[in-house]
Image 1 (cartoon, rainbow, N blue to C red):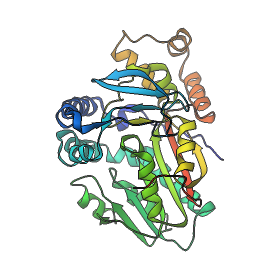
Image 2 (image 1 turned 135 degrees about the vertical axis):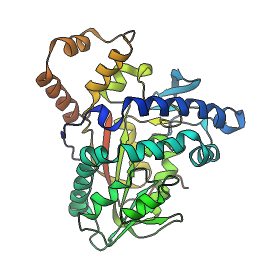
Image 3 (image 1 turned 120 degrees about the horizontal axis):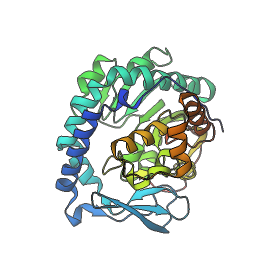
Image 4 (image 1 turned 90 degrees about the vertical axis):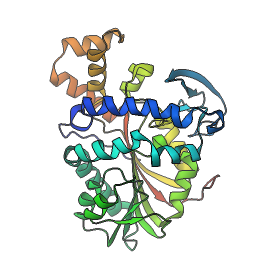
Length: 341
């Protein structure tokens, strides 16, 4: 199984401008209590990665309990919103509208430059190396960054591009980027991308099995997500500012992600952590809130070593799968062990 390192000069402010992020988090916190406060809208779940019932409470965020799996060390919310409650939230909440109107559009240029171009090039390489050359349809699922279609179209690998269930009101943006909007199941897809979706799914296993059912034999699934195994999450833990419900129901460990991919019937080709912002996340969090206590050696690294040392440290995190940003490539090649949509 392969993994890679990378750098594009990305900074946190490029993709998460502080004013936008602060307002988005404020709205999300308010809407989470509006849409999920009723007991019947919450359900207990086992570990979403490995299925284990063995867990312990890790911390609470905005009254929601994050649990740590004692088998694979994944972090997940339980009890969590039901599927119906999540659909209601993403279709109707103020936070969901704000995400589209501000994040999706106002950070589009920087996300294309620093994230989507490199993601598309990597996706193309995976298709060339392990994909089915006869399956020339591509879909992005629950699209929140329509610029992915501009980047993927330039590869010249696909005859048809689909946006499957894009976020509300993003249909015109997807169409402008050359994608056909679909709000019904497709079939025979050669390649599917999931950008930042796994962490907010109520049932990741069922979600992956559903996606696998849309794909051709030897179709390639590419995923970007976040992991609790990453440096910034391990250091900041409950103080990590960008961890909240429902955006982060699942922060699966590298080990948990590996298990989940196999359970859903995929063959894992690559699992990399090419994140560029772990050390910056930690530094920015402590600058914003000096009350956050860091391990002494991390504080020393931040305060007494310069950009070269910080860049070397971030490369180390990438190389050893210790960054919180994960990129996964898998092939539709096996028989799922359990589950269904």
